[in-house]
Image (cartoon, rainbow, N blue to C red; front, side, top):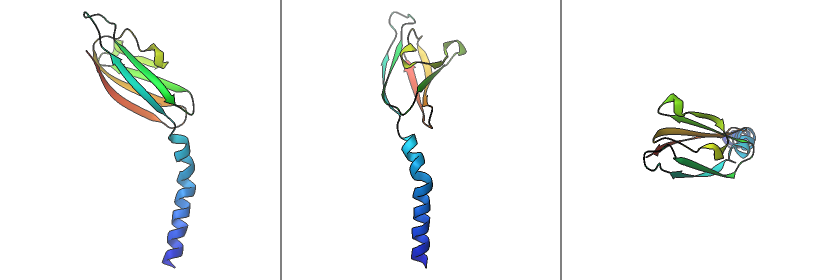
Length: 104
């Protein structure tokens, strides 16, 4: 009896979770940071999307509100001032990845 219950629970687990994992494991990217030069606002965060199952959205939160870049394309993270940023990359499925970034 215990064996049958275990098999049933295992089957239910895969039935419920198998599909959501297939939808959620599709976001992969690389980040390259180019620091500022001569105290100018010319820092760059290069985000290269390697794999995504849907449209990728990028949010950049700076240590000052004026540095925020919300819902932009990965190629629009240019002319950045030195500082601390939180980079959030998400897609239309269920992936959301956060990275702390420092531009010097």
